[in-house]
Image (cartoon, rainbow, N blue to C red):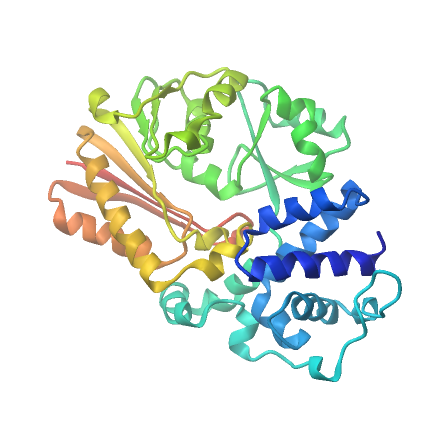
Length: 381
């Protein structure tokens, strides 16, 4: 496919996304209907689609409207590639007079929902602009080195042998940033053998900050795919339990644990194994710290949805706290940069639950390289 044909394909996919179809589904349907498209073409179209979603407001301003064509035209104008719209072959038609270029307003340049801006400004202060800029860009790819299989040196050498370039990242002692051939990672020997796992560097830093020690009984209360569960298992020998309100999310955990040579007990009734020395709550949240990976989430969040998440987080915290033994710890984490979901949620919990102290609090912003994350460790006194 020519660059112009790829732009036209991205326009078609984006029109379906703007009509309500999830981006992954729209891309899959386009790929199935476009057998002529090679792997490079599919990757390029995917990159265009997600770049347009990250920059939806500013691209629409530059492209003349909130349509698939407007978004891709806006991206092309931002990158100096408007000439792709020449109407030749399978390329998009020439821009119309109604598709005039317009400089985005300051608010449009942030590429964030208007209703959320006051809350983000209250949460981030002068970092709002730089964080918004980071969320408009593609996220780096990070790996966690499984030290039970080998250290950083072993992992770097193994990946280099397959043409995958990586470098250590300062956010976590187990983190490698992929700087070359990221799409080869999941078929590499290092990945298939369990030497490395895909995991954001800030997510790894959250686990590294937990008060883990040998022999502890630990519950990962919102385990999902088990990324943090596996990272905890790699740091020290634990009696480790994983729970998720939607058990199907944990379907891959046993295979991942086997590949990493660790043991994790899945449970749908975590209270039966309580008390625990540590309970980690990686709570459902807005995902605002990881919107560059999931730009659809940025535009799908509403005030009502945020209120529902805040209520759900409070209920999960109360349930998890009841399972912590005397002197034990409760870790509350989100991939959010909103103060309402983070420090203010902890404040509300502490106000309503005497006998707990805030022991440690960490904030990670996308400015540090990884996703935005929050962690508060509370101790039962």
